[in-house]
Amino acid sequence: MKSPVSDLAPSDGEEGSDRTPLLQRAPRAETARQALLFMEFSRQEYWSELPFPPPGDLPNPGIKPASPASPELAAPVCCSARYNLAFLSFFGFFVLYSLRVNLSVALVDMVDSNTTAKDNRTSYECAEHSAPIKVLRNQTGKKYQWDAETQGWILGSFFYGYIITQIPGGYVASRSGGKLLLGFGILGTAVFTLFTPLAADFGFGALVALRALEGLGEGVTFPAMHAMWSSWAPPLERSKLLSISYAGAQLGTVVSLPLSGVICYYMNWTYVFYFFGLVGIIWFILWICLVSDTPETHKTITPYEKEYILSSLKNQLSSQKSVPWIPMLKSLPLWAIVVAHFSYNWTFYTLLTLLPTYMKEVLRFNIQENGFLSAVPYLGCWLCMILSGQAADNLRARWNFSTLWVRRVFSLIGMIGPAIFLVAAGFIGCDYSLAVAFLTISTTLGGFCSSGFSINHLDIAPSYAGILLGITNTFATIPGMIGPIIARSLTPENTIGEWQTVFCIAAAINVFGAIFFTLFAKGEVQNWAISDHRGHRN
Image (cartoon, rainbow, N blue to C red; front, side, top):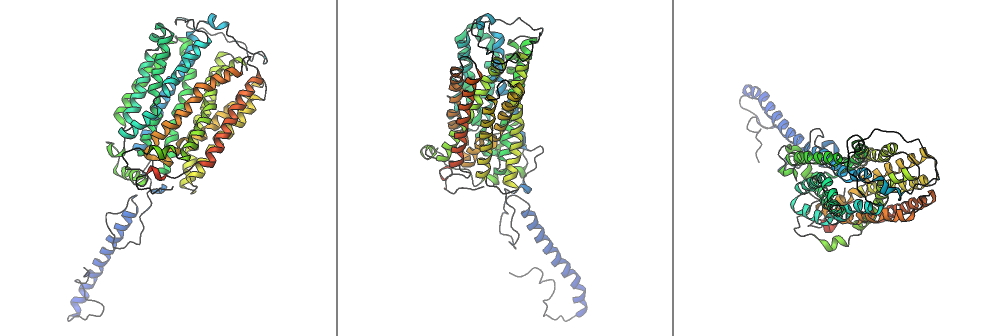
């Protein structure tokens, strides 16, 4: 092809008939040549700075376009759509766990103390930690004649609904999107919570049914959120975004436990349900108005951020219309997550439901101290989740550690660490300070798992992450149903020796789960999870 510059001046070997005009044209020819070179260089520089390839072959392919996964070329964090999603979902899970745990506090005020007096199992191995504090409290809330067994059914009924909607929730979210499913799941739980005082008046059966319905609503939330992140989270930002998102659950526990106690003391227990129910409805309105299922349907996302997200996920998502159930269920990496999730939740639910009991009946803290100290471990876990998410992605993006290495190491720390300190807490006797410190450290270290097995579903099958989480969370809900029952059966006298057995069993299950996950986990997309069977390795 003829050079556009050759028309402006003769070639090096060509002689002109008029030397003066040639000399006059030379500066203009040189200027044109420089302008063309500058334009070509500018084009290449422009395309090299974008996280997606140019629309055609460049004249000079010597400059390689930057990788879409490069952390230097990531779309800005401030005011970004993906981080707005992270923070809105953070508050969603804050509300979710507030709605879940507030009954455990309110139930103490709902039950007639004369009914529970005969069920008192306080151990006297440890001395009274402090004198009871006299607090002027409101006594206008209605009281019910529910014994310890009845209370156990009320608290446990939530999980019977929760376990049913895990897998269906993941499937529906993968087909139709997670925005509405997650939103209406939390809205339904909030509305049912508002009717808790009315259900309690109708009787024990009505309250159990209502709690089971709340469980049905909450059961779809985690699979739906995982399904949304499969379309929103760039691979090298998964740990950060998901740890922010799910950390709301821990902070919801931290805030709702003492806040519910304060409301019960100075108002009455009915306002606990009214307050958190209204907060859930307000959150739902914000969620529906500000969130979209995918970057393509988001109204205010910048073109740069949209292309950054889509290009980073282009080799990871499947175009298959049918779910590969058989290969999925035969996948050993999936079962590695199942075992780890089950093991971790055994300790988590045992402490979530029985830590206040241990504080009150064994260490003998008074009720005011108990509410605060039961929440402290979850504050540590919340902080650990946020920080570990940042650390995990930095190890992958800046230091080039493999995804599998990061998931293994963070799961080992988040499961074996808590096991060690949980056993230690059982063997230090009545040393109140050390007991609280060890239990806090144990729960805090569990936050590392948020960047370990907890998000490994997105690594091995991002297109089916919601379904995978539904499967693993179904198994992981079982400890919430049977763990506390087994723990109570092992502690009939509430002695320190009995609780040592409970802690040792939980620690052993944790260690087994950590080892199993380390041996069989994977960090790349599995062949069955993508239609063209080409796994994308981070």
